[in-house]
Length: 202
Length: 191
Image 1 (cartoon, rainbow over the protein chains, first blue to last red):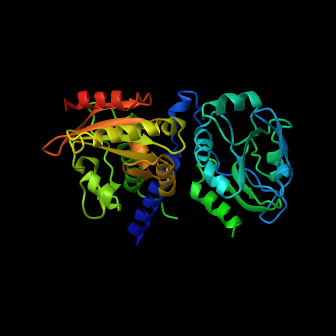
Image 2 (tube, chains in turn orange, green):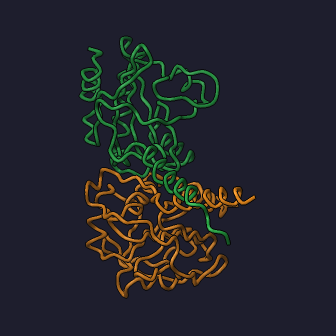
Image 3 (cartoon, chains in turn yellow, orange):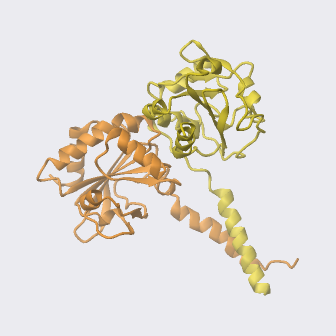
């Protein structure tokens, strides 16, 4: 019995060791060359949501990289909206998230949806960063000032001032229908967003 | 609580530090290296299965592909350069398949680093990729390949005795189908 306990404890130590030392995997595109700032594994979620599924989505108006202001309310009655908060420009997982959505334009259109990409970075930073992604078909918005104001309103502003990696699906009536505050170290699988959007039409 | 005997603690620590480096490489695969050891699922699609010269179900290793040379692209659907190069890689496949001399000697596969099966299918559909693509959902192959940036090209020569070696590897900078085929042919000694 004593031996069994010892083996059990040893196995637990092995398990914990593996869990601690393996960093979250990510694939950096060569498009960003050596410019991606290496980030160690972070606390998966570091904020508390202020909204829930079924709530009316708080309105937002933010400056976009292309120059114009974009408001959530301008899509009311016209489009479903996906808000994609990513933590920061020039970081590993974030740099490889929106380029995937960029080749899925047909899918968003099929589901009558627009994507709004949001970070707390400044417009010039977002300009330089998103230029490496090719031409994006969706607006990229800066929640830089007041710093993280929109992220705070939704409850996805982390304690260090960046946002969570979070997806909100908002229907044409302005109601939140899906929330995924994802582990910041990992990219949300595309199929989860696809499912959420396709459910809007049902 | 009783004190855990030291041999078990030492065993546990040794295990945690010795197993992982074998799985995760600290450098990308390069010319002269062997491929990292990993299995891929035998495609269910009969056309892809036939293309690779495989049969049955289960898993295979790249050197089991029936070919003299296998070109492996480690890519991601989230990688802008992979997206940009996709039509050119398709052209490489067509160039090989249209050549009676090459079509049974050179095969092409892609491994989607961190991509789920759904994401691999989405990429395949978007770019009409004609050759087999495999998901590497948890980055296991990517980690075993030194966490290369994408796209990363590996040209593997398979010898008649079943051994293999990498004869060429390249990060990005895809030059187009014809120049890349020339590189592959020269590196593998097929010309």
